[in-house]
Image (cartoon, rainbow, N blue to C red; front, side):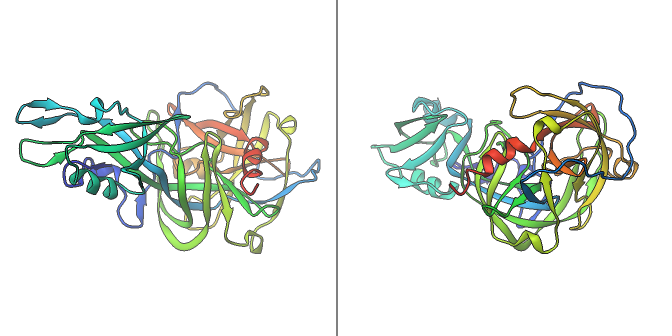
Length: 362
């Protein structure tokens, strides 16, 4: 997060990711308090039953994302200490936390540095800003002030990008799209979904896993590789979606899609990468299926695989998007972890994810 009115100093270095190495991104995996108890053990066999006409290529790959927002997001409004007292230019201009500043003096904004430069050159006429707030857009004029040391400041913190790890759920060769995460990427401070201007998806190598414990979710650690998987196009409540730039069929099987009515309580598996670059199957149990019209949190799953529990303590950050397979079909993806019962979490129906990725190339 960049303080644009103080020589671009880092507000909190722990929230930034240097170069191409990272510890799991803060916002890629929401945590929730537990709901259900008890689960039955499962075996390691996947049994094929009904068939479906639609198939996709199974994911399970860890990936790195570099996501750039449309304009810059305001993550905090602050005050400036001037010779005549405290002032807040951003607040006086009607700017609020979570606003997206898209234009400044008719220039399309693409980075923190760009807006910082415009602010540093501001005169008594101020800066004409175009701002997006939710579905609305409006214009305002910002009048930066000089602090007690003569530095021009705007009285706000902004962010223009995010980065982290996640898991690909599927590749769809019908329209060259992919689906991942099963929930949106949010800003850590505002908790608002980041609107995507562009985003690059790269393969990632997992080097370590910090175990989840009661009250605190762990996370996968790793680094980005140089090979590009695709470009992000949509970041929404149901996940991150985009266009594939690779042929995913070279080393991965096709799998049939299960309708939401086929998902049932009982044994299942997840397919994810917790070491290196190769996904593996791990046993889970689907404890509850929410058959309503909700788009997310469609099922409650419990990790029962002893190997996975030993390595991760349950569900950890970075596993978001891991495919859930039941009866030989892809039924959904892991999306959330229960913070006080990390062996449990939510999943989303695959049908709901496909509705979004089907629109990517339209």
